[in-house]
Image: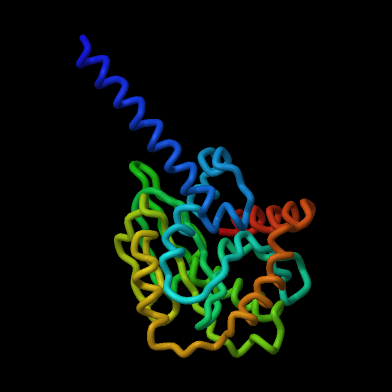
Length: 235
């Protein structure tokens, strides 16, 4: 009986340690520091959970950097805005990350308008995330202006680790496409041969310009949501 009681106490202590460790880890994360989102929201919101998982992987990217999450960038045509999941302002360029928190199998080609998401007994089409990110990058260049238009912009498509990238072809020259667990390694490899283009002061300046776009009015978010729903109906 005493052994069972001791084992139960050890189990409770272990669970408590894991819970507090994960809480402290989240509180120290760049995601929490930038968004201010509570841990509860990340647990309950699928999109936020995916972005947190991806951000933890991106923290392993080497070099000076700053993060912007969920920035609403005005479109170049002046009609509404586009939402970027994550912008990583790095000393070697600006990385625009489209995060997909999917489960199941993913099929796609870099030159095809639609990709395929397969779950048991179901199949869905979704807009090519490389095309989607090209639009984000174009709008971001327009927003930041000529001063930063010639800087390297890297398109990164990250699927969370619950997704299996079964057949993704023709993307190597257009974007980095991978799961979260491979993101830092692939990005570090891509950045390694590039020269540094931003000083720490310039990184901070770009960050401040973009930070206001991630703390946006509700009506802007509502307008963007309507645009997304309208586009989905056209697919």
